[in-house]
Length: 239
Image 1 (cartoon, helix red, strand yellow):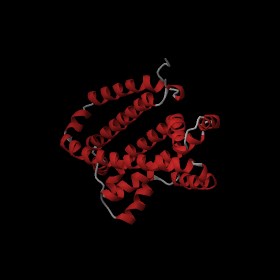
Image 2: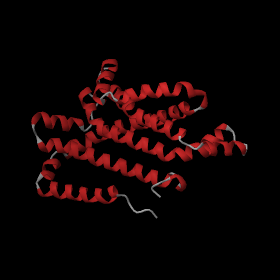
Image 3: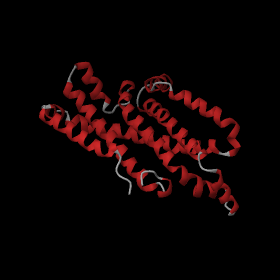
Image 4: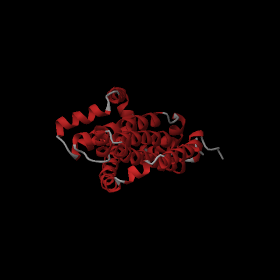
C-alpha cells in the first residue's frame, strides 16, 4: 500500500495548530458572537456552491467527452484555446460581467461561479480522454465493442483520475470564490467577510473566513476520498 502523501500528514497538524491559535487568542469568542449569522448565511453559501459546482460538473464532463471524439479532432483544439483564454480572466471580472447581463442576486452569482468552475473540468476531461493509450481502444474495438462501450468501459475508467483532478480544482475555485458573490447580491458568507473588512472588525471577518476555509478543506477531503476509492486501482496513483 502506498504511504500517505506529505499533504495528508501535514494538513491535520496545521488545522490543529490553527485551532489552538484561535482558541488561545480569544478569537473563538469573537467568532461565536456571530453564530446565528454564520448559521443563516452558510445555508445560502452552500446552496450556491452546490448549485454552481454541480451544474459545472454535469456540463463540463459531457463537453469534454464531446470534444475528445474523433469527429471533433479538427476543431477541438480551437475550442480548447478559447477555454484556456477564459482561464486567464479573473473570476471577479467574470462575476462582474455576469452582473451586467443578469443584474444582481442569485442568478449572476450562479452564472459567474458556474463559468469559473467549468473550465478546469472541461480541460481535464478532454486531456484525460486523449491520453488513453490507443492500443487499449484498438483492443476493445477488436473485441467487438461499440463506440459507446469503448467510451464507458475503457476510456472513462482510464481517464477518471485526471477527470477527478479537474473536478477537485474546479470545486476549490468555486468554494474560494463564492464569497465574492456577496458583492453582486448573491449572499453567502462573503457578507461577514467584506463587512468585517469595511468595519475593520476582526471577529466578523473571521466569522466568515473560517467557515469558508473549513468548507474548502471538507470539500477537498471528500473529493480526495472519492478519487481514492472510485478510480480503478490500476490507473490510480493514490492506491
